[in-house]
Amino acid sequence: MKVLVSGGAGYIGSHTVVRLVEAGHDVVIVDNFSNAVPAVLGRLEALTGTAIPCHAFDLTDHDKTAHLFAAEAFEAVIHFAGYKAVGESVAKPLDYYENNLGSTFSLLRAMQRHDVTKLVFSSSATVYGTDQAGATEDRRTFATNPYGWTKVMQEQIMRDVAVASPEMRFALLRYFNPVGAHPSGTIGEDPSDVPNNLMPYIAQVAVGRREKLQVFGDDYDTPDGTGVRDYIHVADLAAGHVAALEALDRTQDAVNVWNLGSGRGTSVLELLHAFEKAVGRDLPYEIVGRRPGDVASSYADPAKANAELHWRTEKSVEDMCADTWRWQSQNPQGYAG
Ligand code: UD1
Image 1 (cartoon, rainbow, N blue to C red):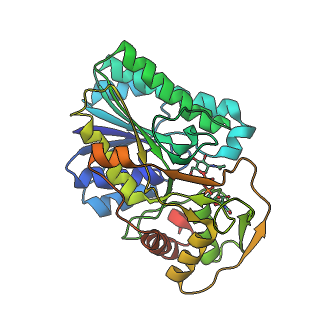
Image 2: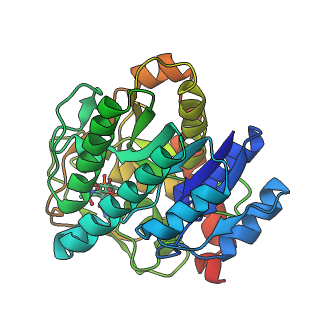
């Protein structure tokens, strides 16, 4: 299939591009590089043996998006592009609504005009709000911050479009906590600022860019008191996207929701200790207060994706740590060095 990957230069997008090319698909990237760097494109070419065409513009620009669809005969879109930092979304709600919804409007308009019917959407477990433990896809969706609401709203927009245009096929992929890197160590997560998320923060402590990890709370109702999350290796997540894309050819349902997670929970301290094993030394940390808005436990019920996509996670927490460490130690300053 000829697939447009929005946000294809980003963390999850770039890993999915590799997997798509490996599966024989023809990939075109669109990315405005607001949270990615062009250097990833050379790494992708080295990994895949193919130069991936990349259009550098903002999808909220309807005219540029329309031109791209007029010039290329896409058969499907995988839509990653979007702002994703919870705290920033609270400070800048209009930026989040305008960017995340605007790019989706622009894409859906162009898809309709050019009869592109398949869309795989990068959603999140954040749509389960405060109810993320053992979540099945039929749970009610709501959010606790503007970022989360943009995901809930984009899902709703796609449902409404599917009613009006029943030939459409949507995959709404609700990710749990993506971590890890390509086993080559040449592409990985490269936060442009202080990392908000646990794994990149630990990796930067290990490489000496941050002094110590702050563990946000050890008084949760979990086995060791620290927050429990369902970490998923980005390579497994990428494979889930390719499986979902291919499933859209078989499904009779216009809207398909799939959780992408392992179903297993890992605590903050368990992840830290697994990372210490990968690095071969202890890492400094301190326990501090809870981070506002955090839930105690979040983990998927992945049964629906397992059955319908013939997909399941294969990588362990040890793989996630080893691959993150390979990426971080080979690229201490990320793509910048
Ligand atoms: C966060 C977002 C979620 C979003 C996801 C995208 C919040 C509240 N949630 O998920 O909406 O979809 O990122 O990637 O931001 N932790 C520490 N110290 C740190 C960082 C994290 O102890 O420096 C803990 C957290 O309290 C949590 C766990 O590590 O228990 C995982 O945190 P994080 O990686 O930020 O992911 P989520 O909060 O699950």
